[in-house]
Every structure is written in structure tokens, then in C-alpha cells.
Length: 168
Image (cartoon, rainbow, N blue to C red; front, side):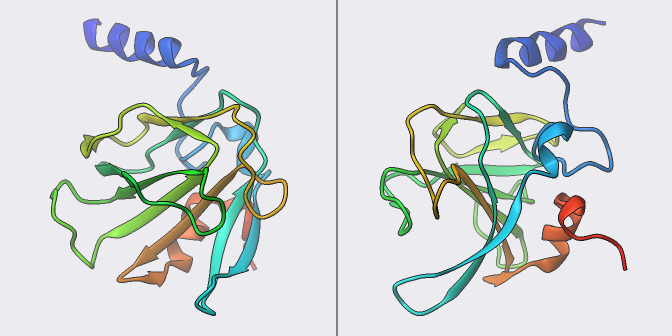
């Protein structure tokens, strides 16, 4: 009971109404999952990057979809908008990067709960959408990108945002 009370208390403190449900996109509350769009952007080096882009209201919680490590980007700047905040999730508890890890990069108008490298649990709130007015690729304020060994992971895109990839 004590653990349940602590979890519910943490959710309430973070303003979370309910954690993501199994089978949902797992990184946002269910009502926001279908609001993303798959977008592409060509960086200054001529590489095409894919993102799931959202225009979300301030205060929306972003969750970790798996147990692993969260790292803030420190002084790194987004090539899309230098005012954006960046954080990275890896599906490994090893503090050292492993190229086999799935990696999720989240950038935009986000407020991080913690700014140091740390272990996170599946379903844990890791950030909230901010209210600084930071925009990415037009009117979007939050971007997600996924890769494994530096290659975009279509599998992870489809697993976390099933609404954007209808079954054929």
C-alpha cells in the first residue's frame, strides 16, 4: 500500500492524471498519442531525419517507455532550434553507451524533471511540455526521434506510436 501511495503521490505531484496504458504509445497520455505527425527534416549536412512531431499543451507529461537511462544533452544545441531542450533515453541501465541500445531523442519546449544521467523506470514521468514558446519545424513544440546503431528504428516508431502506422 505504501508503494502504491508513493506512486500515486508522485503522479499527482507531476500533474499526471494516469500513466500510459499497455498498448498505447507509452510516451504520452493516451489522448495525445494520435496527435503526432511523421515529419522529415534535412539537416545542414544533407541528411534526412525523421521525427514524430507534436503540438502539445504546456504541462503534458512525457513518460519513459522502458526501463533504462536518461541523459540530458548538457550544453548540446538543437540544429533545428538552439533554444530547444534535449534529452535522450536508452533501453539499457548501463551508463556507458552501447550501439545496440534503442535510443529516443526528445527535443523542443520541454522541462526536464532531472538534468543528470539517471536510471528511469518504464512509465516514469521524465519531462513536461514547457511554456517558453519554443517551436520546432513550424508550429510543433516536441519532437521524438528513434534509432539503433545510429539508424532510424521504424520498429520503435511503430511500437510507440501505433496510431500513426495503421495495420495493413
